[in-house]
Amino acid sequence: MVTQHALAAEAGAQVLAQGGNAVDAAITAGFALAAVEPWMSGLGGCGFMVVYRASEKRSYALEFGVRSPASIDPADYPLSTGFDSDLFAWPGVVDNRNVLGPYSVAVPGYVAGLGEAAGRFGTLPWHQLLAPAIALAEKGLTVDWYSSLKIASSAPDIARFESTRSVYLPDGHVPMGHWAGPPPVIELTGLAATLAQLADEGPGSFYNGNLAERVLTDAASVGVNLCAEDLASYRVHCQELSGLAYRDAVVYTPSGLCGGPSLCQALTELQERMAVSPALPDAGSFATIAASLQAAYGHRLAQMGDSPDGRVPACTTHLNVTDRDGNVVALTQTLLSVFGSRLLLPDTGILMNNGIMWFDPEPGRPNSIGAGRQPLSNMSPAIMLQPGGAVTALGASGGRRIVSAVLQLISFMADFSMDPGQAMHQARIDVGANGEVLADAAFNPTILQELSDQLGTLAIAGHGVYPSLFGCPSIARFDPASGCSTGAAFVPSPLAAAVAEPQAN
Image (tube, rainbow, N blue to C red):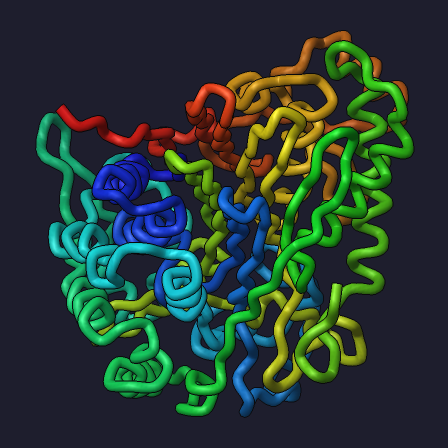
């Protein structure tokens, strides 16, 4: 069990020890992250999940991205000057209303998605899966130095909204422990009560029940324009995946409005451009990776977007799970920005997404704002099946950095026979949507010079805790030959962890 927070990984591992399968563990860990990593994901967010069913030897994708409200009016997002204040550098909108506050909130799909996963693929009762998250929320969020850093990074925006400020900026300041004293604890009482109600009433109640009424009333109290039909009409999309052949492996990733199609296109480009792989990745390998990503991004931003009927064929947190039977799950979930819309619903304790920021605010484009539409996102959870039967789950957080990270990890393992630990420690590049290439300063200086010579221009930066300039991935692998699982967490993160299922005494 690998997540970006050790407590969530431990909660998922305990569910495995209780007899649950990989999907059960993923659901438990996912909800636990809402209590221990609330700035990244939660009930007000969304996600994508890929499931490999060992008994069937088939893979499935569940898509539960956000939807724009039915009442949304593109005229409420007039363009201003410059660019937005957050991840994607869209043209600026007046008051940043597509990024911050009530106008930035889209219909959340997270609870529906995990509820669908539990109903289709889980084995344990719903209330049992949510019990660890409830316990963690009741204890409150212990504010260590990393939590203080995450809160501080969004403090100016959080301070604009009383409901959020009162919880995460008590006394108007970033909570921080005193020297040699215990760390402060943020109360999450509203969230704990909401999770308990969700556990009792089931996931459907979030969309059409008592809990839905509470959420809508709570949202209206802070100016969020969601209606009962927005929630009641929400549907999760589930499909079996055919997979993409890459070298002698098969890669499964969602095909909807996410990073999956771009990942597949980049892998296809890489297979054609790098016909023969060297023994170890060299400057030429990374130059070819950069060219493959540049080609995929060019198509993505020019062509991909929502269709008129809401579907086209085709910061964030990530977790991976394997179980004793060989089932494997890759789950990416998000509020989009750190703290999402920065707007906390005061009664239910739910941090709401800012999914409207995923839309291009300019009208007439493939991904423009429109009523009841799904925006284009970057989430790319993936599962790779290799010769011999080894099944690997992987994915990343990091917005537009996700596809670069996932593609390289797949290449490291499929092209260069790296195990998860080696792949995770290998230095990487990042290719932005504008085609610029950023390289990790940890590369050998010779590779950096050769790469710069081949590309003509190259930016170099350290890969650290903050700022995070590269994707933040994780990996979990099940090997049927040995019956063993291995996992690798994001190296620079102080909280990420790979946790084994506890063994009975």
